[in-house]
Image 1: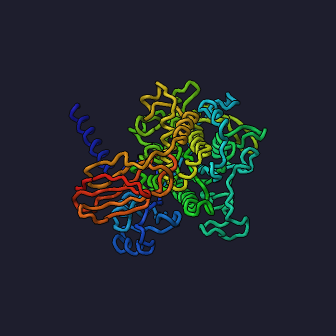
Image 2 (image 1 turned 180 degrees about the vertical axis):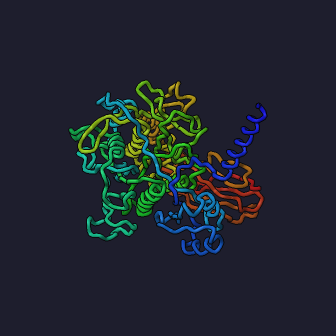
Image 3 (image 1 turned 45 degrees about the vertical axis):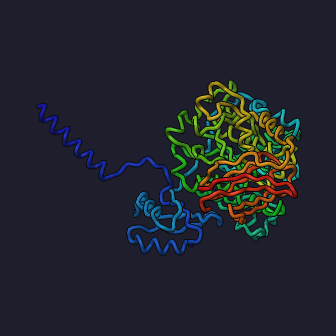
Length: 542
């Protein structure tokens, strides 16, 4: 009898195993029938379509749906999931020589959670030290008069809320309601940015996005409702619902900031940060190549991102999270803390990926229809952080304001470091965040003000490293003022092999990086020249 049961058990095992091989099980939650891809810069979609069809048809068939902006050659393609295996198709796309990167499209999740409306005051704003900063600045403009813009990507916004409407960013280059793309950015009548969910300039009121925007930038000092982290700020509101929308929205705001940098403020918008109160659980940044790449691209023009992690009590280093596992230096990732400064029990954490804690639980903010109430989760933590980034740009420091345009990426990284260095240490966060601390924007302000007051010393090369060098050389220097300094490099025969004009940073460290990877092996002499003042340093290249 036992042998009979054993035989039946073996037959069942074989049957189950065969079924498992025949029908692969996937827990992937991508949108069926959608693939995002980035083509090489000179490749057109027509080129790719012809080549891909010739290589794989009739095995695979995909259709170009739309370009995700015009800058980075990223596109949304669709296919019939009933006729094509999505993973096989994605693998074929990734292997194609015209493709830089490819991934599935996904729905993004607002980072909110149910909460009890137990508090009616903004304890969170007090906890991060914002009122002390308000004694110096309440936000709005830089020391040189640039209007500061914070981009909020979320599920929708009540742009007519009494405590929000005055702080909604307006595209001054667009004429309202004329049906014409006046500024040539491929969006018609985008006067108040864009609703990427509906592909429309019209925003749909949504509870989540409205509450997020209120924390970062509800109007302050107007005797109405609450005060945001920034009393005066322009909020660029971008409605997004999936990864394709996010990529397109990021390019939209990136193009605005790049135009502002290039024209010294004559066009575009001075976007300094984006808020990410959304994400995708259990995904690593390496699995979202296109989405993840956007943070460095935005950082190059001076845009930081404040991102809240998942509303689930797990270690993101083990299970993943987007976008907070992205290693870009232009992201600051936060977890949600409660009134005792401990991590809220429903928040994710990560010793490497999560930079700091930020109050979010039971935040008091605006609601749709001129209402107010409680809001929580990492969705509430993130706008406190992104709002703090924007607030620091408004400090009365001329050097900071000048560098924000002439050295946008370096200035953004300086702001980031000030925020990380300025945290209040919290013992319970030591093994849950990289800094072991909770956001304190006042301490970050003090760090920046100390640097702002520094004076320039005499012309000097203070540090040259590495030496010997084979790839990239870094020169740290000092200069007596902020006029251009000539950099010249000579070989041992006295021949000039390299020259450049350096504009010293008005704010933060003065350094210059030089790619020497293509230089011949030998000794070189680097000199800084300002009038009759010359300093020289020998460097060996191998």
